[in-house]
Structure formats: C-alpha cells, structure tokens
Length: 211
Image (cartoon, one colour):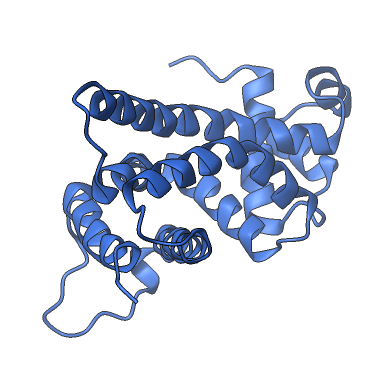
C-alpha cells in the first residue's frame, strides 16, 4: 500500500492534533513532527495554521455536506413532482443518516468527530467560525424544508426544535459507547440503521409536538 503524500500526511497529523489538543494549543511544530515534514511544506501547501485548519475541516465536511444536501434536494424534488409535502421524518433522515454513518468508519473518523465536538465546546474560537461557515448553507436549506413540512409550527419554535435536535445528534456523535452508562439488560451494540431509526423516533416526536 502506498504511503499518503506530503499534503495528506500534514492533513492527517493536523486533524489528530487539533482534535486532541485544540486549535490554539496545537503548534505547527507538533504537526510537522507527526507528519515527518518541515515547516516549509506546511507553508507551501496551506500557507498558515488557520488555513490548515480550514483545509482539515473542508476535507471531511464538504463531502459529508454534499451527501446530506444531495439527499435533501432529491427528496424535495420528488415531493414537488407528485404535488406533496415531504414529511418531517424524511427531511431529518437526509441530515441524520449520513452523519451517523460516520460511526461506521471506525478509527478513520474518530479524530474528525472529536474535532467537531471540541469546536462545539469552544463556540467563540476560530474553529467554530470556520465550521459554521461551512454548515450555514446546509442548515438554512434544512430549516426551509422543515418549515414546508411543519407549516403549523412557528419559526421561533421550529428554530429551537432544530437546535435541540442538532444538539442531541452532537451528543450522540461525541459520547462514544465506551463512556456510556448502560443499564443492565440494555445493549448499545446495534447497527447504524437501527440507531438512525431510534434517533428519528425521538427527534420527530419533538419536531412535531403540539403545544
């Protein structure tokens, strides 16, 4: 198997160190040492530490967002063609399912999941600003689709329900099984397809709740 090229080695090392130590506590020296490259290689491929962080986020998040948005747009187009309004569950599935399937990637996705968790825990940092810039178009489109589906829910209430749903998803992604407090007789070793349905049961109940 061929070794990752220089740029990819830098991305891998940066993702790992940013995830474990945070953006500000990670030095370019630690990244170059892990990637076995010199500082000139980082400057050549990325230009700056902040640009490197953006490249790390873009490398993982752009394909994920493209998958989520692609599913959502196909759903909306199909509903429009038959003159129907897509249901809340189907809309949420386009966001939830691709996200939870990251868990199937095992160790390859662990650093990225940890990095997102750290960014969400440090909401005023440069990492969060980059993350939200990448997420804003998708989240706006998701909100528009849910407005269409849940026309009886006010925009104010819908905002908070979406906020709570994304918060629950973030918790699920960040709290790995080995840290869960599991009651006797309960199994957390379930297929992703079942986990998606459990999550949707919970989220849809909240999204569609009547006041």
